[in-house]
View 1 (cartoon, rainbow, N blue to C red):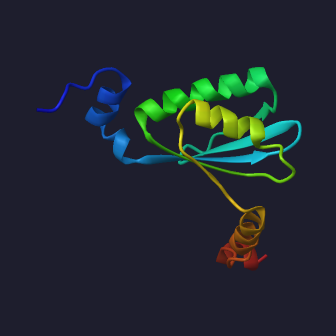
View 2 (cartoon, rainbow, N blue to C red; view 1 turned 120 degrees about the horizontal axis):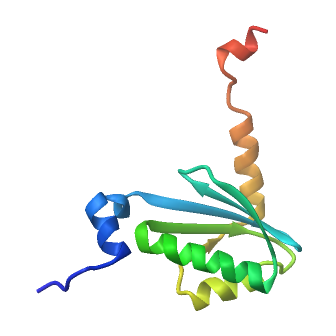
Length: 121
């Protein structure tokens, strides 16, 4: 017999939002994290400090309760260590993405053909 699900998980199940993943891309720098939430398109910047990371952790934990959360981040230079510790402590699965692959993807995205109306100018 299955147990009952209450709270945010139940609302997510009833509304169907648990079936649509939320992707979180994080670019880690020495002094800040640039965060993009997809499909909402929300962008934000958070200081790479203990208090700001704790705030980010609370937000990600709330999101994980209502949607399938997929977190990916890229960094170089070891600036991502605090983020890795936070995500591990919160038991949130995250994926380290090779910075070279991120740059290649960005280049490929920007090289797609432009819309026809922009070429007619």
